[in-house]
Image: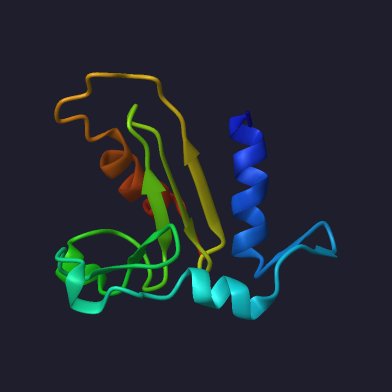
Length: 120
C-alpha cells in the first residue's frame, strides 16, 4: 500500500521524464510510450486519448478541460484522481474515499483553480 506522498513521488518521477532525486528510474522512451495515445479513435471522448495506464489530454479545446496537450492522469473508484502536466511542471494527487459518489466533480473543479494559480 502506498500513501498519497508516495504516489506523488512516483508521478513526479514521470513528470521528470523518468528521474527522481537524480536517479534514473525509467527511460525517456518508456515515459513517452506510456503517455502516448494507443487507442486512436477507439477511445470515444473528444480531445482525449489513452496511453499505458493514463488518459491523455490531446486537445484542451475539444475536451473542454484545462491543461496542456500531453497532460495525463486517471481517477479511482472512490473519487480519487491524479494528473501530471509536464509542460507546467504540475503534479496533482487528489485522494478521497467516497462511495457512492454520484456526480462528484471535485477534481474537475480543482484543476482550473490550480491552473489559475500558475504564474509563469
